[in-house]
Image (cartoon, rainbow, N blue to C red; front, side):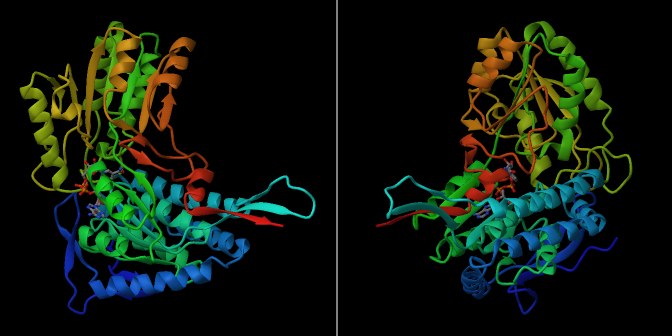
Length: 475
Ligand code: NAD
């Protein structure tokens, strides 16, 4: 499989070379350089802003049928190009082909969903005396600056492009420099589907330079960011200077409450697979396993045997269940966080070290009895590590679930109605899975609370996040 050529896409043109700085894109399974990615100059960013302003003026007037047709055609192209897109994503990000194939289908599903939603951007008419009229309408917010990370190189990009395109906005996408081919592949589907080239563009660069430049421009009316809480807070401050609208999808530290009345085998089969998906580099990854005392030993034993059996290897190989971590920073972070936890008294049951001499592989790891002052109990690990602690009762479990300032995804396993009701009412999270880890879907709002961010992607809420409301009163 050859890796596709890299460029930026500004006004539909592939832009590269001409003395621009570059970033080496690395295959995380081998450590080898796949290609050099051109980075934007200030002039490139100014050009993209100028084009985005034109794109907005044009696209906001496009009929719903045209927007929907583009999204539906792009969805069909994604399906047609699924294998090439999935392979490029696995090459540059590491996760297994099975996972990247699903990501392509997630993107296609989201585009199809938004194609339908375009027709449902309804306003309303208020009850007023005859002869007068008050109506509420929704309009596209304006050009969007969208920053997508590397962990879902296709799916995150689909979210960042789909909603603005459906809403009638234009968008400048800066996807992660580590996974550019995936981003370009998704954007190309939209362009090939007939999206006017001014409407969606892709730039790459030094992240801080690009975000300061784009957010410093009055052209941009909305920031959409997925990434860490620390970077999210920084970008939200930049956006505040111009009162730009924001959607922030930030970090999490997924609590999983396992009650004594849980169906333990079903819980284990589900959560272990979910924990090590994408080598744990998932913002909604189940991370802190908060287990009620009577089932603690059986849960740890079942977890460890399943984790130790996971087949780790190059994501392109059939049968591999977990690929490498996405970049050199992640195994380093794992070593630091796990080392700190063990030094403070945590029990290491399996894993805890890198695998092999090439690439960024790290073994599926299980720690138990982890002290609350260990860094890993407070900082998002974003890696293949499960933290399992015992708790006396539901009160203690819910208190632990809510201990951190994050509030993205939370999970609970119980067969009891009382536990379900308490968890649903008391756990602070944007998304809650009870006896399931399937918490996403194109029609279902995805987002967090507290330090995990605000606003949503997916669902009608994802589209609303790209619209502003205008109330018109006529007498
Ligand atoms: P990071 O926080 O520096 O980067 C995260 C993402 O933000 C990357 O895509 C990066 O390109 C982008 N970014 C960084 N600085 C930026 C800036 N000034 N302007 C615009 N974009 C910027 O670090 P990282 O090493 O890539 O990841 C570390 C942590 O980020 C992880 O441990 C995890 O907590 C978090 N993360 C979260 C998600 C998510 O889905 N919420 C995705 C990737 C990373």
